[in-house]
Image (cartoon, rainbow over all chains, first blue to last red; front, top):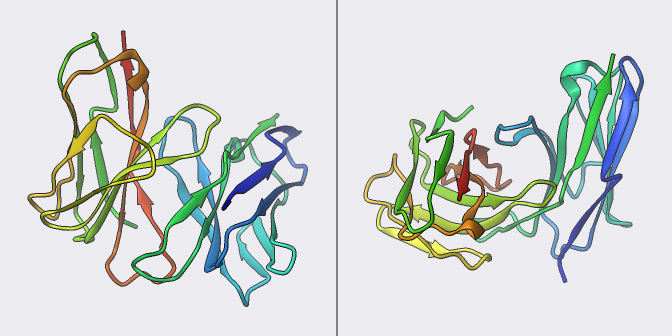
Length: 114
Length: 114
C-alpha cells in the first residue's frame, strides 16, 4: 500500500533553533517528493521538490534531503523564526506524467516560540 | 505562482442546505482538483478535472458534484449538507505540461454544517 508517514506529529522549538522533520514513504513507482508549508487556515505552498536523482535541495533556510534507496526524506529548518510556525506536509508523486497521483502525509505541526 | 481564488473562506450552514463552493483561477491551468482536509489529517482527493467538460471522482467517496464548463472555474456543490461534511475544502490547479506534478493551492473554504 502506498503511504507517506511523517514524524514527529508535532514539534515545539524556540526561535533561533534548528529542527529536522522526517518523512518515510512506500510509494512505488517513485517520481518526485516535495515538501509543502501550510499556514493555519491557508492552502499548502510548495517549498522544495526532488526527483530520484537529487539528494538535497535548499530554499533559503529550508533544506530537504532524499534517500531514494531507504525511501526517506527530511526537511531541515535553520535558525527558526516565528513565521515558520505551520504544518509541513510531505507529498510523493508516483510518476511524472499526466497520470501521476499524489500521496500526502498528515504533516508535522511546528510551533516556534519566542 | 498561480492565482487561485476560493469563496467563501468560511461558511456555517444548517443541515439540508444546498451549497456551492467556488474556485476560480487566472493562470489558464488545465487541471483542477478539490481536496478535503480534516485537522491533523492528510488531504484527500474528492474530484478532479483535466479540462473543460472533464470531471472525475477522486479517492474519497463524496456526496458532492463538480462541473467544468470554463477553464477558469471549478465549482463544487453539495446538494444537501450534513454535519459529516464539516471540513476544509482546498482547490488546486496544475498546468498541462507539468511532469513534476506541482500543484498550486487556494486558501481553502472552511465549512461547518450544524
